[in-house]
Length: 243
Image (cartoon, rainbow, N blue to C red; front, side, top):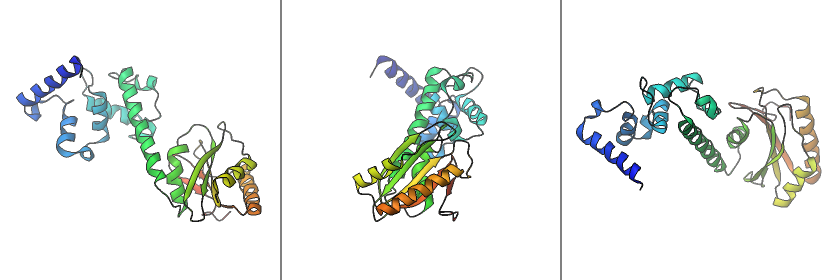
């Protein structure tokens, strides 16, 4: 342990031993609350306050965190999209604190992805949404993915097929089924995102779905559904009766 860290820890211990909680600085209260009551007892602002450690002369870490959250309508997904420079526009947030916030939110996003992978069997369009939203739901560009399944509808693999601009993406039909044959998939689900947030399928979406379904039928590999994913919702071709 470095001397600096040792000194800071000992100073914290001195403060805690000599002053009641009600006399602690506002910045220390979220940490103590987490220790005494557990992480679920803390608000989003209090958790962020722990990340940044301190506020400014005229504003506590908690109040600063509340102000940052208010700027994104208290939406953690929106907060995760803020850049370092945007976060540094808030008085009291320097580069190190901005990086801490971004890193923590990215870890949360990756955790959601890993949790989704535990959905070993696909039983509904919602299950696909939960699997793919952390992957493509918040992207600013369009990506086309394939989820490959075995004959029990268990996920064998998910693979990015193409990556394009915000106006669209290209799909290689041959590659879709080459991958399916290589891993022994008997079914697959198409999935792509709409960065615009619209859930209305385009003519191109409908055409590629039909093209892949016909190709799959000839190879006895079923195309079970096609999902359009946005940040908060999805559109299922099967659920909407156009598959």
